[in-house]
Length: 364
Image (cartoon, one colour):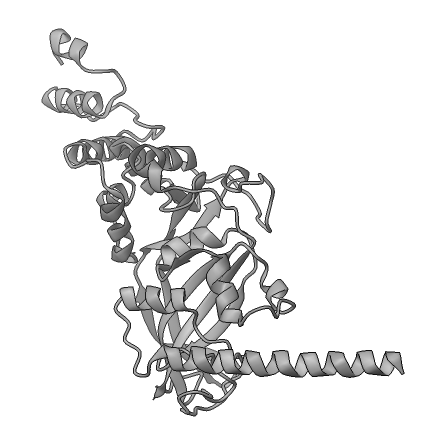
């Protein structure tokens, strides 16, 4: 390698390793430089070449462009280029090294979408084989085997203590993920105005199922089809709703909803380390789903023991959010809301009468 050229290239860089290998080849010698912690010269050269190939493809992404990357997962037989695509917060060198380092690190952090001081994570699912076999006497004979390729997969969202407004744990087990700081910094720099701190109390999952469409699977028979999953965060505890009879419960939800999404990637950030509450509501009319049917639209289904029974309809804000996402209710959700209000009014009358009887009994 010419001395004047060498002076222009940073020693230890990918370009330096590739140029040195070319120089060695002209002299009839093999590559001899390590790179990015890889001491084997051949593997180091391969890594350096991949880094250079990716250098011209990196660019800053908007939040919307970045979110679309998750829709590509899982990626079968992934390459270092796939890793670099999923990691806009990393340099090509960092992304390629992280890809080849998956054996030493289970997860790689990605930028968050909604929660400040949080991050998403991906991992590499290694290839595996599922074998079919039969027994011949006491001998196990493998008859066939299906091999599944390695996959780059979505894993989960992780938090840091700083992601909570009160700075405390909320059921989390905090751990360190490689490149977490770069991921959080990238989000802060490029869509920081959209990031918020967690200041809510509870997280609720609302499973929207259509009892007019029954499906069967390996595990369930004649179950209502799941249409969507709506995730909510609440600034008042769900259990407190049970003791607040001042208004219909759907109205309480509307007052205390902080965040709402049908995006499972965002939902994983919103939940944090909390446990969650799960409700089932009717995609046909918006009412709460009972064990084996909907009391408003009247559709019935088999009790598959996944529901605990729930009568509260979707609130007005929840209905509006689902409609914005394109969902069409086959029966006006206002009917379910009106029935809830009528039931609540009857409850108040009964409660007042019971209270009056108790007062009369004490007076006597």
